Image (tube, rainbow, N blue to C red; front, side, top):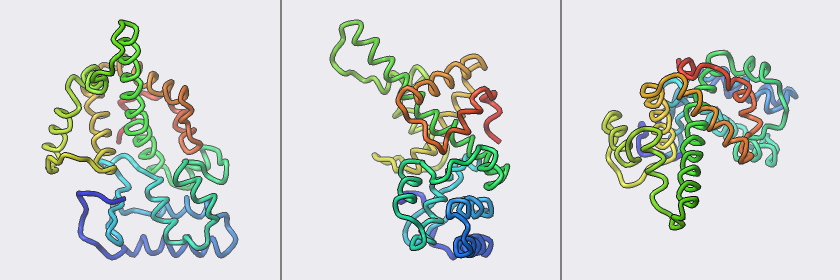
Length: 247
């Protein structure tokens, strides 16, 4: 993914080169490519890298694992050996070719990455859903009150959840991170910002409010049919204490 905050292009680390070598070898040996991919993910230790003018960031804030970005990176290394339809379904729809039990997925990528994956699910996917759910509530309230013109529903949602407008929060985030105050935001930075908002909400809210907001977001995801197979194991964990999600 292109990004504004990318390191200089670098050579692949030996451990990661070994992960790619084993991925290729496993596929050549007849193992299903998806199983081989998850095993390679389990071997991967680099949090981010620059490759061919692209910046891949796999670990947000050092604790939230964006596993599909790493899957994309590894698929590029063995692209010619992968079924195009299955690969596209995984990378763009989050739909793997094999319906693995959550325990098997965890076993293949490892305990640490699985925990970091849950951090990403709750800290990015669910947090995005919470913002959209509250924005939808604001819109319905205004329509019920006869205010049919679209107003600033997004900023009102941010105020209700975090106590400030999106612009003010983004300026604060960038100031803390040492990022430039640009007019636009890239996808990777947006994920970082969303995870930062998640951590801010945990600090500002009591346990009951955190649990209530998390349930609201999960219910919204289900209602919109946004539940991907790749997130189903995370949905099984929705009764976890939210403050225990991050490492």
